[in-house]
Length: 73
Image (cartoon, rainbow, N blue to C red; front, side, top):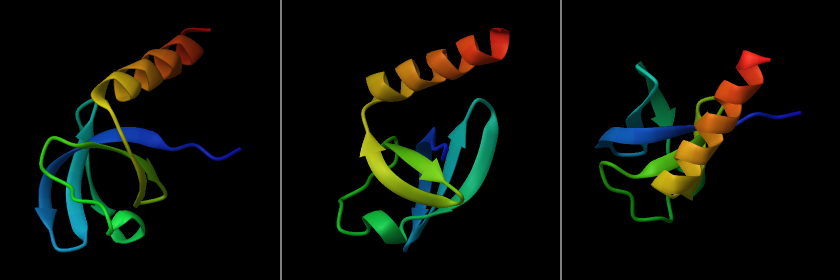
């Protein structure tokens, strides 16, 4: 099973972005979604250091709620 986590873009520099989620910040490659117009504040799904898809803030929040529920059990 592969897992991608929602992260919010904080900075963009070429094909890299600084993204954060739940207090964790990472440098993420935008190579796989370079055809999209991305701006600071956008949400992306990140898998092994690559942004693989854009998502809405609502989708990001719902994903984190599910992850939190899984960790409670």
